[in-house]
Length: 480
Image 1: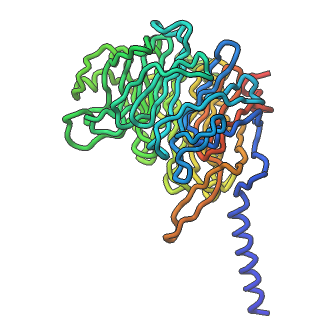
Image 2: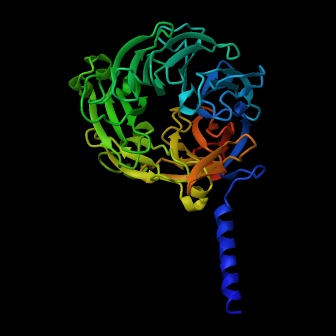
Image 3: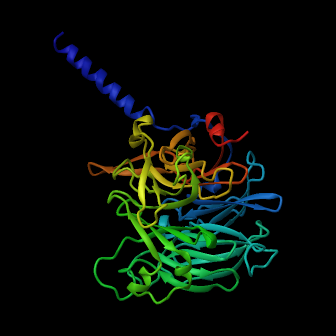
């Protein structure tokens, strides 16, 4: 008995530990995990790995334009079910006028290749009637083409898009930002003669058929002919437009990141030659993050009223930038990638004032498989959520809804973790020299529309999930 009892206790403990470690593994057919958010509709996007959704109100319709990563090793070019042909991942066009019944309209193939080496990740849309020199009847879609180009399409008829022009000769591309009111575009690119994988090219796309390059821009040390250590590469930009006269740059992905505040007018109209002095000229300030974190998204919320400061003589309104890191390694094999809120009211002395992460223990996320950590936020500045709510993609922790009315104390008020399907792709790690694979949702990027719907897309081929707020989260957003 003295031997049996310890053995029994051992097996009981081992069984409990195994069960605990696997209790949160997602299985096909299980319902989504949710709090104060619900699924309205979904589309499988032809089982293509999805990166960026952009939602555009087009006449009496709402159209989602969704950029894709390249294919996988197993399926480098998924079959387009509408044509019966294998096509390299590119751009999906989906009618979401009725969010409960999204209708797939068209797939525009991207650059052949797998993962980051193919596809057409990024997409932005501007009406021709908004652009200063655009065709008033056109709707223009700006997208990346793999790593080699940026393209502009006329998608006035989203079923029959027409290529207008392309900016090519590049070695890498990623996120971009397009000001519809001016046509100025900030394109994350890889110019062949620069020393970094990704820098920024500024273009005048006010007449999309005739792009005009304004300048190349990056950090001193990245430019052609520089020497020494190459500074952290650019990841994305968001402009406050001509009225705000600021552009917020994010550098880094999951390490060595920082936010840079740029004078927009000086960037566009200042000296263009990429010398060290000229690259410093438009910079107002930089704020370094921890060496453990990058800056995927730098989302400005300027002149934000802070209720707690309402009775203070000064500082009632603050300029806030939400900074989102990107997790890139599976199963927590890196420092936690999070969300940070910075007060940039005094621009030459920006400071982090708060942070947010999903508690790992709330879902045993490090054991679920795939990436766990922040990736991106919604970027719409439509009044329905702007300066009130933020939505963060957190890979295997799904979509997280934050009440940010007090950015000094952001509060999670809801979440939605989609169910996996037969299309959801595995994510693998090497353990003791052997490959171990698990299947988990990988909510990648997201966006909102003026109606209040949240659109999340999955990196692991599960598709598009259209969500809405319920309960306390809906109340926090001021929605009826």
